[in-house]
Image (cartoon, rainbow, N blue to C red; front, side, top):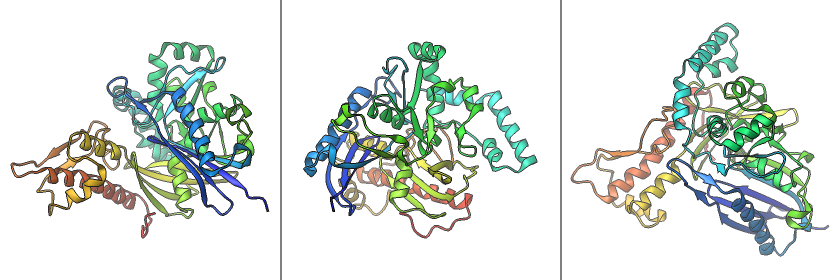
Length: 422
């Protein structure tokens, strides 16, 4: 029997990875490249789309070379991407109006605070709570505790629509197209034939309602997001993704799956049953719980997401996140506390404790259970006896303590008993 190969492409916040699997799920080829983040202004975190596209095309080619295979031997392509990072482009020319605005970008921070403190939003939440008291609908209970965050796409997209003149003009003329990274990638891979996103990526934007499985009309109206610019929301897997255009790699490759990276990690960790939980620590720390066929209603900040949608099957996830895991480590490295991240364990273990020093890992604010976007990072409890080793230990402990807080939040908000974290 002829061997079959699957191409797997993952585009995270820091790396692009291409893996080729054979029919026995063995890796036969791989290649990795770095995502080049740009910081044009204070709080701005961007990705150049042209540079990213070139890197994606090349890293896939290198994985084939590593496997000794070609595009024509690929049976299917599966994709996972970072979430909430978005771009807009012209419907008529296909050219972007700006670079990718990533999920770590803080340019809309003032807008986030203004909206959360605004009378109209407080009135909205009060109305949602009243409806919850009358109807006992989890959807309205969730709405009563809703809070805008920088990591969501909503307010950053609103900022772009207000501040990027070409986009503002195009949106008025109906010439603007919006997409998270997965949408843009599918658009590029199919030479402009597809303008879609899967349900898992849509749910991470902040303006897709996981309860109704539609773009939230109240939110698009409130933030004046042109509905005609939004992609069609499709199932996570299926033949509706069609295939890559020949112009990309010289041969058509069937695209069979496109999924948000954290929910792809849930799937890859085999968290298929309600109550299963996985924890990943990379650019951020993400604590995800499979909540079955019902979206989670949170009052402490666990975010309800769609894990995947396959026909009539919709699997939901509750997520708590620490956004600055890698940022904290990189900052401490740049500060000179250690030369390489792998040195930190030995340095931290060289002292019995942190000598009372604590570090607050909040470069992007604090998530659940605090949900305080104004929180700031810093060491507290420093004294004349404090050494570099104490600071390193406090830094590492801060990430462990915040992860423990996510766990405590999940236990308090759900009826699940977590015996195993994958």
